[in-house]
Amino acid sequence: MPPKSKRRKNDAGWTVVVDRDAPSPKAPDRSTWEGWCEIESEPAFFNVILQELGIQNIRVHEVFGLDDDYLAILPKPVHAMIFLFRYREEDHDMRETACPDHVWFANQIPTNACATIALLNIVNNIPSLDMGPHLQSFKEFTLKFDPLSRGYAIDSFEFVKRTHNSFARENDMLNMDLTMKLDSVKDNRKRKTSAKASRSSSPKSRSEAKAESEADADFKIDPETRSRNDSKVASPTALSTKANTPVKRTRAAANKASRKMKRQAADAAKGERDDDDDDGFHFIAYVPIENVVWKLDGMDSFPQKVGKADGGDWLDVIRPVLQSRMAQYSEGQIEFSLMALVKDPIVEARALFAENIKSIRMLEKRLDKLNAEWRAFLAGEDEDEVQEATIEGASVKYCIATGDVEEAVVPAKVRDWLTLTDVEALMRRRWELITTQRGLRRTVQDEMDSAQMDVERAMHRRHNYGAVVQQWLRDLTEEGALAPLLDDPVKDS
Image (cartoon, rainbow, N blue to C red; front, side, top):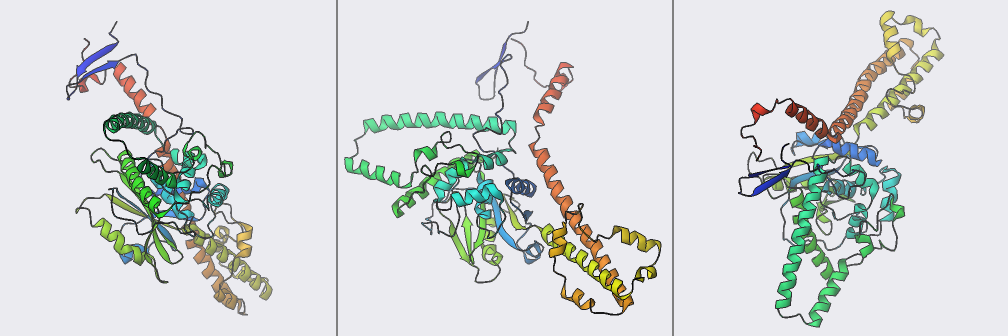
């Protein structure tokens, strides 16, 4: 019978004991996991998150450059930009020391939540956006909160957390939990060391201790809100209004809060780092709000003004800012990405489709009035095929409802055609509309296919392939297929 453990020395000279009978660590349940997973800079993942949060009519597109040619191809309007970069702690003073009432902004409290924080900081500042019942209720509930209170409310909002963590892999959750445990051990050691040092040093005066205590109280929210376990909610209306009352902060407290957020930023970056660098990646948002462009970075205490749009294209305001940030990286060092939140192109495509359908119907009614036998003049088989493919009413395939057609506004040129009395001329105009519809059908279908591809990418990202790979490796091991590949197999001792 083989021994239950094996011993060998690793490269660092430490003796590693491997217990064969030790059970594999059990991955947490994604629906109840306390942490937040990392999310890659992939537009498909962001689009699926927006869709599942209930947000309508906006999509995320990747931006490949800031030249006019690249920006011109983006669907309009562009609601915001999301910038991913390698985070480095900055010590510069924040120009803004308060959050304006008309700007909805939340701090990032949990590690790895920057992607969702950036999205929420954007969608809550887009006027008249259909956000769905959950987020609309959450926005109204947190409208009077300060950024820190909103950050804690997001961390306890299970609907948002479950959607975010639907992308969590088992290894991600296990590694994150292990990192948190190790950080907790380090923090305990630091506290013990600090306590010993404080006992050996001269005590602070009562006035100094009281001043520090008052400064801390200025920016800390109610402990009941800080505790995840005490403030778990399935919807924002379930939160305790008293526990989540926003805290008014003085300028001194704001400065101290800013320093604290920077320390949190450094800690969060460590949680989002890759294998080769200690600096992690971080998402921030640039959003135009009432003709002013704002940088919404959850690691900042407050939103920061970038500049005024002055009625022009707000992208011209952030272009030099982003170019400057990108120029900080060495040539060939791709450590940033840029995505745009735009109006979903399928909205405009379906609107034009509905206009086309209504226009064809109106022209055919006009032809019926002028000559009830006008269809007899149409060419045979080709016309039959075209007529069969032409959509003249609601369409389940293209998601166009009867109400969409009825509410469509017929273009001015079509209204002019309706005054014609020449049957042959009207038939040519009808054929022109039918030809146009072919392109509209392709456009709508392409957008629908693109959305479906996003869903499929997200499905593959969410699927746990680890279990399949592990079972495959076990089968190969039992059959001895891996033995020739092991350069230095561990021998039983």
